[in-house]
Amino acid sequence: MTGVPIPKCQTQFAFRLTLGIVAAVTLVRCLVLVLSPLDLYPDEAQYWWWAQAPDLGYYSKPPMIAWIVRVSTALFGNAEWALRLPAPLFHGATALLVFGIARQAVNARLSLLSALAYLTLPGVSWSSGLISTDVPLLFFWAMATYAFLRACEDMRWRWPLLCGVALGLGLESKYAMFYFPLGAVIAGLLVCRARAVVFGTRGLAILGVGLLLLAPNIVWNALHGFPTVAHTEANADWGRSRYSIGSAAGFLFGQFGVFGPVLMAGLIGAIWRLAREKNRPEPDLILAAFGLPSLVLILVQSFIAGANANWAATAFVAATPLAVAELARWWRGRAIWVSFAINTGAMLVLWIFLVRPQVADAIGAGNALKREEGWHELGTAVAHESEAKPYTAIVADNRSVVAELLYYAQPRKAPIRIWARDLSIRDHFEMTLRLSPGTARVLLVLEPPSVKRVLATFDSARPIKSVPIPVGGSHIRAIDLYDAVGYRGAQNSADDRPGSRAAVL
Image (cartoon, rainbow, N blue to C red; front, side):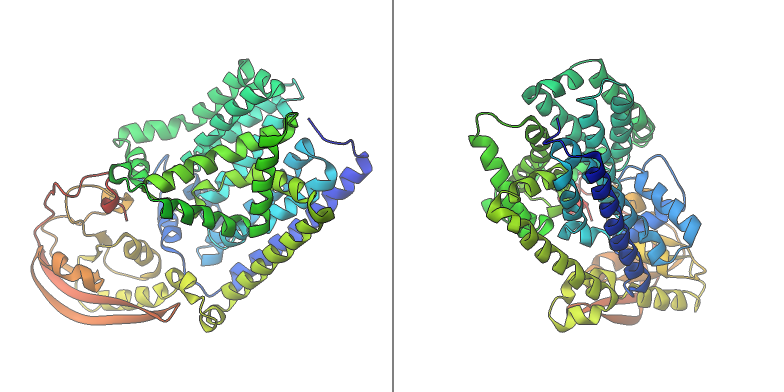
C-alpha cells in the first residue's frame, strides 16, 4: 500500500521533526487561548452546561463533547481557556495521525508535509480556538482511517478492532462519522485489499464494535423520543428545499477558505488526475474514497437546502495527503510551499486577532468575532440586577443568551430558565430548563425583536433598563431587562412543528 520504500532512519527523522513542529505550534495555540480575552461562543457555553451533568446524550449532539469538557474543566478549572484547551491538543494529535495516514498511503517524504499541511489548514487554525464537536470527530476519523489502511496490509485483528473503536467514539462525537462506513464501502469496491477488509468478518467487526460503542447513546435517544435524530433532520431541512445553485457555489467557495486555496486546487487536480488515469494507484483511491463522499453529499445538501462550510470537515483528513501529493507534482513542488505560506500566514493573523480582537476591528474583520464578545458584561449586569428583587427565575427566549447566562451570570440567586413560544422542543434548554406556567416573578432578558411576543404571555411587565453592549464589527448587542409576573404558559402552534428550520436556534 505504501509508495517508494524509504529507509527507516529517514522515516524516524521525519516523524521526530513532525512531532517537534506539531508540539511547538500546539503550545503556541494553548498560550493564545490563555491570553485571549474573548468570551465563550454560545455553543461552547452550552457544552460547558452539559458537562455539569454528564449524560449519555443531549438534545442536539452525542455526549463526547460534554465528556471532554468535563475532564478538561475538572483538571484546569472553568476559565474559558480551560474549556477550549482540548481543541489544540486534539488537532495536534490528529496531525500526527495524518502523518501515519500519509506514510501508509504515500511515503515518508510527503508524510511530514501532509501532517504540517493539516496542522495549518485555515479551518483547523480556527477550530483550534474553539471547543466543538468537530475537534474529537476529526481525531477519531483520522484514527479510523489510519487503522483501516493498516488493516489492508496487516491481517492481525488489532487494526480492525482499533478501527471499530475509533468509529464508535467518532459516532459518540458527531453523527457525521457515519460517512466513514460509506467511504469504507466505496474503498472496498475500488481496491482489492480494501475489499478483503470491508466485505468480510473484519468489516463486520469494525461495524459491530462501532455500533456497540454507540449503543448507550441510541438507548438515551430512545428513552427521550430520539431528539438528536429530529435535530439532525431539522438541520438538513429538506422540507424547505430551495435548490439553489448560489448556495452550492457558496459552499464550494467556502471550502477554499476551510482547506486553503492552493490545497483545494491540489485536491481538485488530484481528483481530475484519478478520473483520467487508467492505472490508478490503490492508495490514492482509498484516500479519495474517504475524502470525497462527504464533500459531494454536503455539496448536494447545500444545493437542496443549504449547508455550513464545516459540515464536510471529515473530507479533509484523507484529502490532505492526496492534495499534498498532487501539489508535489506542480512546479517541482513549489506549490506546496506557496500553500504553506498562505495557510501559515492566515494562522498567524488569526493568533493576533484572538489575543487582540481590537486589531480585527481596526482592519474591518471584527465581525468574525462578535459572537465571542460582550457576554461577560451581559452576565454581570443580569446577575447584579437579579439581586435587586426577589425573582424566582431569570428568563431568556434565545438559546444563545440562555447558554451564556448559565456561564457568565455568576453569582445569581435565581435559576436560569428559557421562555418557549409553544409546546414544541427545539433545543436542550427547552427540554430541561423550560419556564413553568405560574412562575411568580421573573427577570426577563430579551432582545428587542422578542419583547412583544414574550410580554404577551405575562399578566404584567415593567421595563427595568436596556443593556447596550458593543461587540466586534462595530455592532451593538441590545438587551432589554423586564420585571414580569404571571406567566401563563406556552400554547402549541401548527406553524412551529418540531424539526422545522424555524424551530432550530
